[in-house]
Length: 158
Length: 227
Image 1 (spheres, one colour):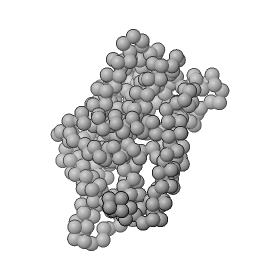
Image 2 (image 1 turned 45 degrees about the vertical axis):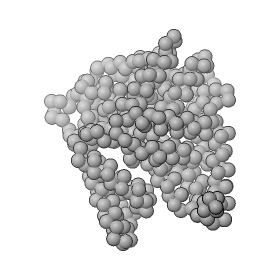
Image 3 (image 1 turned 90 degrees about the vertical axis):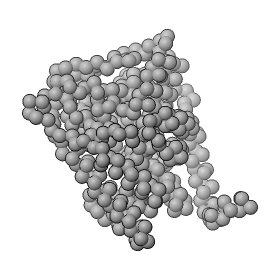
């Protein structure tokens, strides 16, 4: 994936490592003709992921994807106290958007999920918020002017 | 001979189920997309029409990416991504707060709906469950391998598991964004602002961001949307 660095939280990294190991195990057992382990029984894993174990094509591409991420990742860390007043990766930002309240967490592209308020640091709004402080007003335009006013910044990375 | 070879891979009972499946997904040709219905668009685009264009868009745009994506997977994903709506129906982010009063509704549709962290979670889980249940019902009698491939592709899209799933998830929104821009161009007072807000908050793929810039240039040569 063109040498891209993946910014991820520690929690996400642990999840990925665990899934990666499980998938490698499934692949090894399949190659030996043994029955694949029932990862459905694992409490921490996404149960739907089990459907991948029957499908070698999906399994291999998912393993390659994990490998690439694990080789090219950078952990999102809580910044030093004197830098916590500035929006950075991992910041939970309360904002006022043209008079409406909202809350975003700025994450790397891998964990972005705007439906849950997780905004990518590579999106125009995510990018524009980075480096700003409480009280700053950021205007994202073209073609419509949208004003984001920062109300608070918190870091609660897990 | 060829026909026989194809049909032999499924038993006759299975063919009945496959025909039933084709008939069911055919219904999407007549299902209007809810996002346009609530905006009072006459004869709006159907779910199948959206699927047709997003499949081509995803294919063409995926080729522009620096790193290779699996096109077969993307096109298949595009074709199945909304079939769950045969049973789940189409939903919009406005559904839980949409006023019955037409004037109030039109006012709400001028903005992008904002929810608390908790509400976002509940709405996303509700939508996911409804659509997954719909898909399971739709494909339950298909041959196991086909059923599993469809479910895997849908999960990949829904959760953005692979680079293809992630890319297509965005491409899907981009097709809707293009359609909204076309409705804005062709219909007086079409509220396009929420689509621009969403585009700026949601997308982070360089190819798709470039595509959005091109839409801006192309659609706003003579007329700009209102703030």
